[in-house]
Image 1 (tube, rainbow, N blue to C red):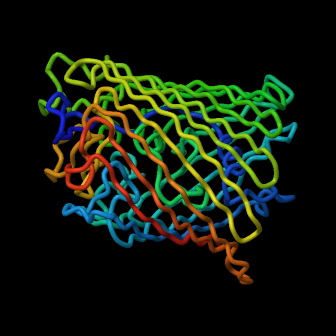
Image 2: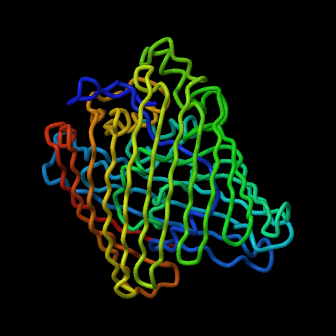
Length: 436
C-alpha cells in the first residue's frame, strides 16, 4: 500500500498500492520462451550435479525524455524511471531445474542474486533492505527456493516449490533477458507482483492442462515482523493451457495486502483493519506462436482492493498486446500497445527517492515530495522497438542483444508527466543485454 501525493486530482487518496498477485509455477517462463528472445533452459544432465546450471545476465541502458523533466523522472515507470544511464542488473543464477517428465521423484533448486538499479524495485520487504541505503544501485536476493517433482495424483505428477520465487504472472519479468522491450508495461509495473515467499504447487492433469495453488506471505513480502507488512497470508489459484502453438495462464491471488503501518501512521482511517481487508488480482496471459517468425502475446489484468482508497474500495484494469517478428538471426522488430484504467487513481505513480518504493509497500510516509500519483485517469501507451543480436563468436558469452525503442504515453484525464505538467510523454530508450 502506497502513500502518495496526487498533483492533478484532488480526489486521489494519498495511499497508493503496487504490485500484487498470485502464485504459480514455471509455465509462464516456458510461455515467454516462445514469445520473446529468452535465456532458454538447458537439458537436464544425466546426473544431479551435472545438471546444475550457472548463468548470468548483465543489462544496462538509458532513457531520454523529450521534455527533460526537472525531477529527472519518467512518470509511470519503475526500472527505467531515471533519465540517463543505469546499470539495471547484474543477475547471477545457480539452479537445478526439476525434470517434470520423470515418472519418479526429482529435486531441484534456484538461487539468484541481483545487483543494480532494478534492486530498488525487485526487493521484498525486509530482505537486504538497507544494504545500500538510498543509493541508485542496490543488492537483492531475487530467488531462493527448493523444488520437488513427485509422481503423485496423475501421470504427469505434482510439483512443489518452497521459498522465495518469482511470480510468473504478466508477459514481462525482472530478468531482462526474457523481455523484448527495455521499458515495462503498466500492467507489469502496477498490476502484478514481482515475488512471493511461501509454497506453490502444480498439478499436471495431462499434457494440455495444469492446475496451480499456493499459500504465501503476500505480495513482495517475506517472513517475520520486518518482512511482512501485515499478519495475514495470501492465497493463489490458477489454470494453465498448453495447446501447441497457443499457451495461456489464468491466475488469481487473494488476501490482505494493506500494511498495518499505513493505519498506524494515519495514512488510512483508524477504522481500517489491515488484516481484514481484501485484495484480488487476476491476470490472463496468452501467447500465440503464429509461426517461426511471428509471436503474438496478450495480457489482461484486473486488481481490486476493499479498503485502499481511504477505507473504500478501488479498481484498476488493463490490456496489453504485443507483436514480435523475427526478420533473421540478427534483427527482430516488436510493437506493444496498452490501455490501463486506474479507475480510483491509487495505483500508477512515480518514486523519486530510491527508498520510496519500498516504503510505499511498508505503509510509511515517502521521502520525496515528487513521489506522486497520477490521479483517476486512463493511460494509453505505444512502444516500438528493435532487437539486434550480432553474431559475435565468443567462448564465454551466450549472446549480446541491443534493444532500442521509442515510446509514447498518454493520460486522458490528468497531467502526470514531465513534472506533473503534461498529459503525454515521449521517451527514447536503449540498452544492452549480455547473457553468459
